[in-house]
Length: 232
Image 1 (cartoon, helix red, strand yellow):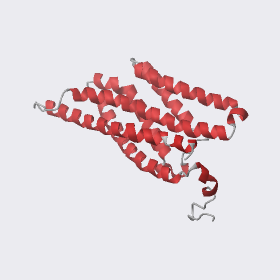
Image 2 (tube, helix red, strand yellow):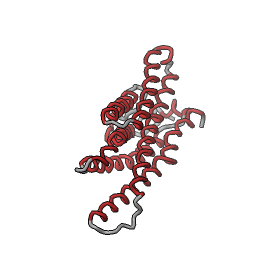
Image 3 (tube, rainbow, N blue to C red):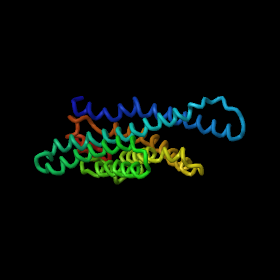
Image 4 (cartoon, rainbow, N blue to C red):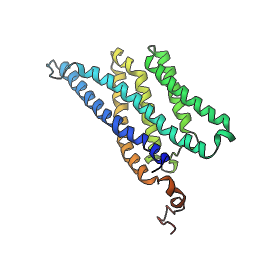
């Protein structure tokens, strides 16, 4: 493996080492928080620690930021490596620097979103963060597997990242809303996000099997993938 091959492993390595364990912990605390709330609602004493909700909130914020950050890393590798290979920096320097600015603006928007307190600013910077992710994902260097979008690692990941941005934007409203509508929205969307994360595990593993080492690409990309035949 050379340097390019090693950098390809940064995204999946971070996902396995940090994001997926955090998903399990957040789901555990979410279940604990719900069970405690139901027990107290029924007038029973709960053995679940009252800090379960606080831990769920704190770790949920960490998870949301890690998912968005991991998405940016996953987009950065193909964009910048292919730009360098295709000499985009010299032939289309405007687009190259525009992409850099989008990356910086998306990171800045995410940071400010975490600090915003009013609904207006949370909405503004959540929108900017989401727009930044979508614009970066639309770059021609990103492989989206559009012909099989329903099993695409890109589309699963982008949807999950946008849901995490939405979660960061609405979490203060969950605790202020006495009707529990925002809590219901949060539960439904994040149950869907868990399914997307499971799908990410499958599609990510498949993609690692399909992507050849850089020194093998010249030969393997001559293969007939439909008939599963390669030249000698």
